[in-house]
Length: 131
Image (cartoon, rainbow, N blue to C red):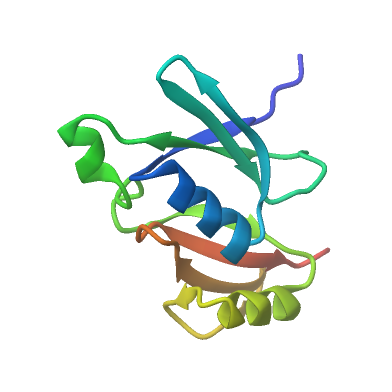
């Protein structure tokens, strides 16, 4: 048996705003945007081939869900965006207006910088060291 993580649900306040941010600012690719009854099935992925984990953007409906938009990680980094060219991607995201919370760090495990997305979710932009 072979398991892998397919996608993670991410609460958003508006589908179109979220699609624009993740695709136009972060450079993700829209894998799916389909009507499913009164809802939409929206999936974005950082990889143009669609390989690896993706984000399913889910519009918050209930008051509880709305209160969790941007807070699913409870203020901690909980999403990790890997790159094979840290400096280029860091500069591209910085130029696109991404809010970095720190200067890049070069640790024993690789290069990393924490940023917040449109909603305040914390991410690591990371290039792991190859052993």
